[in-house]
Length: 209
Ligand SMILES: [Zn+2]
Image: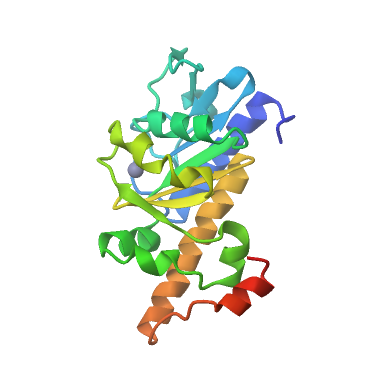
């Protein structure tokens, strides 16, 4: 992935943006995607354009000091993305979305249900899905509330403001988002059926946790 040419990496952002919009993981011009390119530059989606309609020419390049290079205005969550990269040298892509079911748990004050270790495949991929403290969207609080949890987690919920997933490339970060929303959907259904059962210590141990 790291060896792919930059034009192909930008094309992958466009492809992932379309998937996110078509699957209802963002609405209107919500959500944003970035990748870390050579020289610590970032390519990030712009503000004010629907992720379902973004083209590579809309992507905005930002240098390591946070200055925009070339045309376009970066997403208002640029500082959130930059903060992830500063805490996670291993991360190459960041996806922020508004997945409706997973977000609903945080709006209802039931993020504890997402954090419980219920689905074996989620435990193997993420460990668990923790939720940060609340921060006003696009404010300087955003980078602060994620800094502890992002060090050890590839998938977070932002309290009453969607999700943050990271990965070794943009598809990896996107698939973690898809998995997070799927897990939330299953947990919600299980709660309606009488309650989701958390994996026992013995079951977790057998998963290598
Ligand atoms: Zn948002």
